[in-house]
Image (cartoon, rainbow, N blue to C red; front, side, top):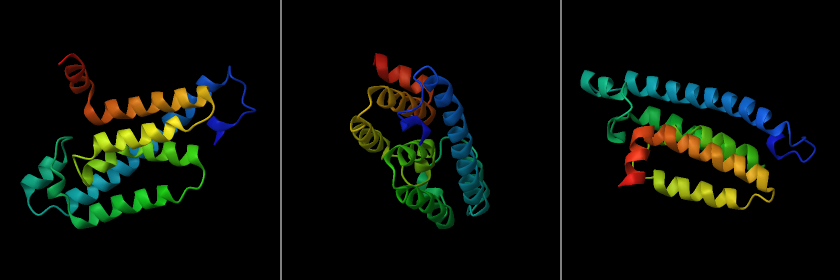
Length: 151
């Protein structure tokens, strides 16, 4: 909510952005870890559990309990009424979509970019885009993003 506050001095915006996004990154990491631990504990065999410990796993091996927990987090996020808090919380949880589907990321990034386009304040929109890009690089990995850019 602070990032959309028109009373916030523009000189303070970068500092507030860094503080808030670091907090959101910590939150997103904790949620991801909780869901991954649930998926590992509910894995059908040791090879599935070992694969879930890596960043490259197939959503088909994720147990239903972990998927339900993941969906529940996105439902909770969708219930946030104000645009900016909902947008930033959803962006912080983007890595968690990996538990549901591996193919939805381009559509998700497009949807979030469209939502950001609706933000009226250019500075607020710029920083929201920067956070979306940061989250996209966390999902795809830096080397994969560079490879796609030069292909």
